[in-house]
Length: 405
Image 1: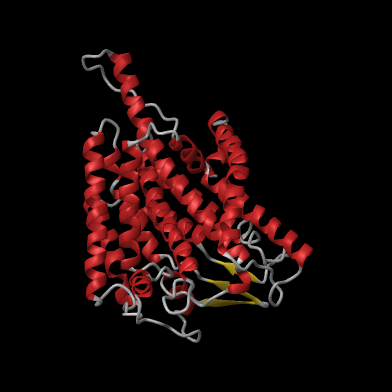
Image 2: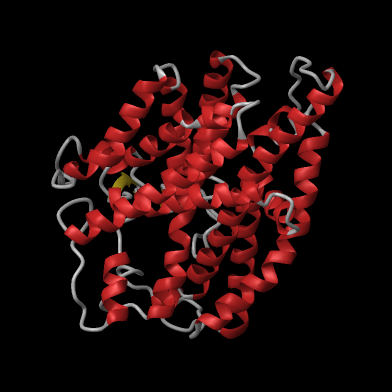
């Protein structure tokens, strides 16, 4: 989509000049979106490097204010922006796709790509995690972020046919009220256990034959996020005023963050309570320790709010040198996602073979500096294949399946 050119009627400058101006505005708008998506992919890289090399230091909750090392806590906190921002941008991108396609075509694309993502999660992505053996069928299926995005796209394929006001209403109702469902916790004996585990309860499903599925990303809140991203699409319509759009994004982002601080301080809804941990550092950690699985209202407010502010900032400064590089990572996100997982799997297994297990059967390092060093090494390493694929997808639009990556 980032190469789309819009043609508009002449208005004083002449048809050709007006067309060029509008095309430039469209590219700017999409560069900002791709750049934010690219930044999110780099934050995700940090988190996955952390997971890969800290397998021997697993904790029940990596944002537990009582037990987690502050450095590990804030490194993990960086990744909290990834899924909410990416899912919201997926909804927004679907609306932009509809600028040059009918709603029926958008629905068809969302349905097909959503199902394709579900297939990838259960196959290519599922085998990419460091300790997952390359055998079929695998012993574990992790229903994670690609699963959640896929299901959300399938749901959005139907929800885009609602009136826009209804899209906002349904999206807000899901995001704001789903925490009221938290007390519903069916047991494995319940006939509703499996479906509820996929919708709103992080759990383990016994598939049989020694196989299990872990519903890391229950999907209901993510459906609300993708729908709200789609409903905000008209802010980015071709010919829209960039200054007005930036102002709206800043107001929305600031309102979400201020609202989060107020609701979180009152400690009455939206997540587990925060507490005075004895020191300002750990008390702040408690205040920022939020539930991601499924994402609570208070988890989504500051993350989506920060995404709005960054999107406004990126559009305002789209001519800076860093934007094209970030936009490149964001222009081929699924390719980057799959490649970086298998690169990490390869590095991990080579290290395990050379140095042996650090604890039990897994290998790991003892300090965060090593994690950040590997991130610094991998960014340029992954840049070149990602650039090659992004250029291939732009150049070979005749290859239909490339658009699904």
